Image: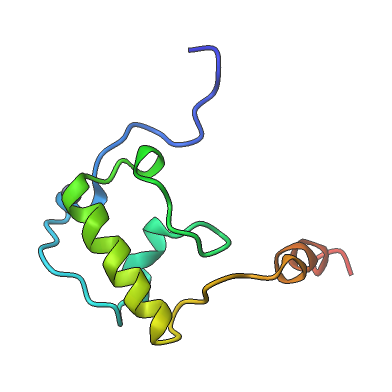
Length: 87
Ligand SMILES: [Zn+2]
């Protein structure tokens, strides 16, 4: 492949760790499927299986409603952080 893949070989992280139930309060587990702007990562990038992706999307939406995960990140919040190390 000429193009370098951003994500390595795909496998479902949740199948590997045998997750049968996801809790919206466990934000740490959701981070695998959230982008840096807290978007839900598409299955083609994460390699999650259909079953777990469906679970994840429901759980993330619940977590958003409970204000555990932000809906959106403003552009400033994302951009200003890399410059903090320079000061
Ligand atoms: Zn899976």
